[in-house]
Amino acid sequence: EITQILGLANDSAWVNPSIFNDVSQHLSLTEHDEWMLRMFYDTRITPGMQRQDAIKMGRKILSEIRPE
Image (cartoon, rainbow, N blue to C red; front, side, top):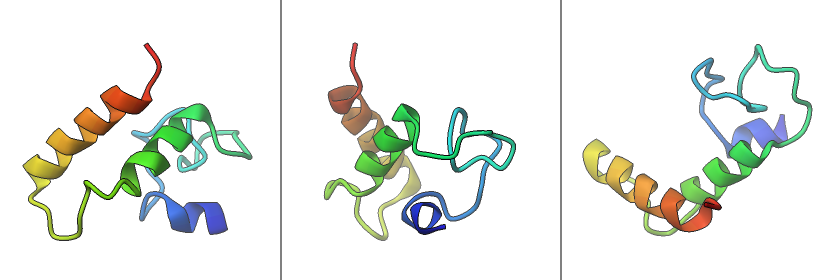
């Protein structure tokens, strides 16, 4: 539950493979989850950002942290 508090506000079937998906059988963070959490807590994503700006920045951050 603590892990869930750190991630998505609600479980999502769109996020897979992930501990944040109720259908998933994962009991610990997946690599995908680690990327999401690093992106969520990156200081370039700020409260109150416009959705399109947050998406653009999220894509930039993921391109930096995700392996090729």
